[in-house]
Image 1 (cartoon, chains in turn orange, red):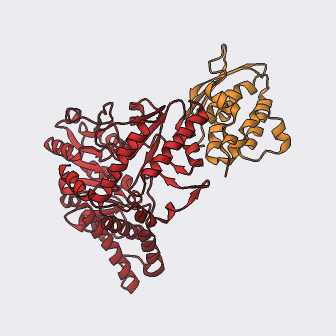
Image 2 (tube, one colour):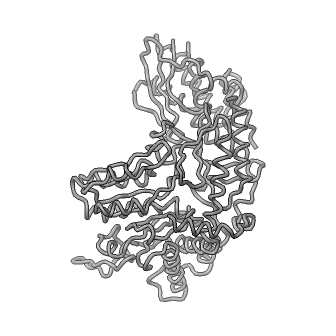
Image 3 (cartoon, one colour):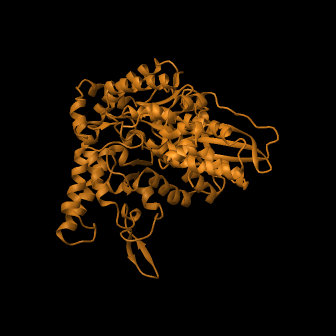
Length: 150
Length: 420
């Protein structure tokens, strides 16, 4: 039986209650929207890039605790990352929440490792990964809204 | 309504042995995440009694054959069982004749059938279809599609703060152009019981035909079509403790006879040639192709089971759960109930302040409590109350006061975890 406090870790509850970077960053030049049809999670993600590096990130939207904390921690984690590094981070994060991450990958995730408990709750993987899918859309810059139902 | 209430009151004096009823439902006796299952998602689908499982098994093990065409013994048995299910549905609804019972895939298909046949044949540009603000998507979208095809307009009787449509509002939205009025008997999202007999009377006076979506009422109230007065009534098998993929459309014989067919195929024809095809009589005109034979037989078994239990007694027992639950849950700090209709069933649409319904449902699931989190396929009513989603606990006659207590304790745990 999965342990509930593995899913709702302190760090996640904290970011869910007080999301960081819950704002539209000044000078944002990338923007993408994401939507989770199942539970109605909704996000608009904003980025400011300089020379291919994320200098600022923020989001608006509403959703469950896993979603909100994930979006909040994402905006912290991608600052200073190149597009390539950000996408690579998403790959490792996705491996984590789907239960496929190895020890080496876990160690490189920092605070994001708090989402390790999600893998025991398959229906919640979408909540954890919506902001990241939206990040990918913002970076690729095609502007099409992202849905977790793809 | 008065009639139903008095029957319920008389039945209430008989004891309801809930433990004996629970023993009929094998799925209820299991542990989920180490706790005895508390199944409170009955508005989504209901669990199945042994009688239904046995009927399905008997059909597949003994009587498996196609119907209405086989001369052999198995074909005869299958046809008899399928048509017996139709007569059972007729009796369950108090319909005049078995031929008024059309088997469909469920409520959704039943409503689509009426929209695509009666609607397409009778609606013109400028005509109106009247719905209410608390309809399930399946009683909205088929009418929008019909409106697009015909140029008719969809009008909506709005919901008040308690989660009711007031009679004045209903009448205000009726007009001489209203051709069809379609509304739910009970709201799946709020549990509101609508005064459908009174609405039907008003709609008829305006010249409209009335469809009642009975998906949420057939499992919880005794249905007497003559008391409702409507022209069409739809319900789903899986919500009345029967199989998925089967449901019933009841329609007045004269309306069904005048309607064009829905789908073309085998069994719905009288004769076919490339020059001219004539259609079978009702209800077969609307049952093209090999139907869900096992499903219909299983549904028949479910309805027979309900008749044995007694729907009036079941309704009286559920009313006790509804008032106990409303009181118990309203007393919880930080928990708000959406929908406070004066007439309601044991459906609780809850908002835990500061916690998303999806998180509520996950915490409850770890306690073995199954609820629904989301918009319940009724987005307009969620918008009406300004919430994207709710946590919905929907009870049936096999639930207990003890399970309501488990839910209340689960909600207290939610608030402890999220510290609100």
